[in-house]
Image 1 (cartoon, helix red, strand yellow):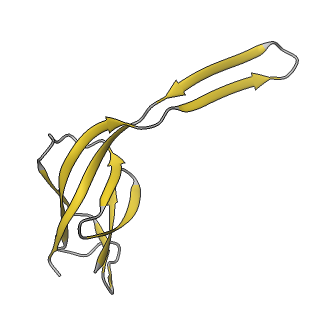
Image 2 (cartoon, one colour):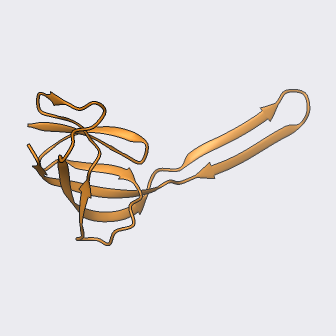
Length: 100
């Protein structure tokens, strides 16, 4: 069985024991988190969410993602700007579904 959850402005298709990297959650390592915004659960599709459905997960780690380089340039103007960004992420293992 699979579920589609929404967190951090993105949607993820998850199954039990999947490990996903999502936008940073304020939770310690080893903590249990619940995702209430379940868009689909198996064959059931919510309008827009399924009432009472929850997906639970365990926080494995907090880390920063790969560096993304931002480079801006204006031709013939000697204008060059180089910047970098590393997003804060949370690694979560999906442990189960509730409210099926």
